[in-house]
Image (cartoon, rainbow, N blue to C red):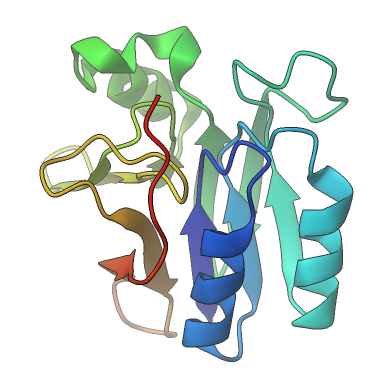
Length: 172
């Protein structure tokens, strides 16, 4: 199962379009919030790729009807999606990790920081990922980023942070 994980598009979809084009066939598109009023356009892009879509509300999605959080079961894994702003993620991942463990999640996905992260905690059997931002990255090098996740039966999921070239990032 091929899963594209994105966040923080803030109403600008050029980076998302490039990521979708680069990745080919997908099973899921998961968006961690701050869609910037583009829910319908993102749904159209997912529909055109014939993949399932799940989005959560970010701190800037004030008027959105999206859920604040979602728990999905994909490929036998419990995936908890949240934007992250309610878990003080700028100060680290301890709070979001502890909440994910309490919820029984195998994988927690969040956004908000605009910096990509893959943290695999084997002791607690949980993976924490953040795809960064497809519009205004904040990590060193400031490249638009997303995560490609793959789930193959009988194997551990894999995660790859990928970058989009050729699009100027926004500076906030």
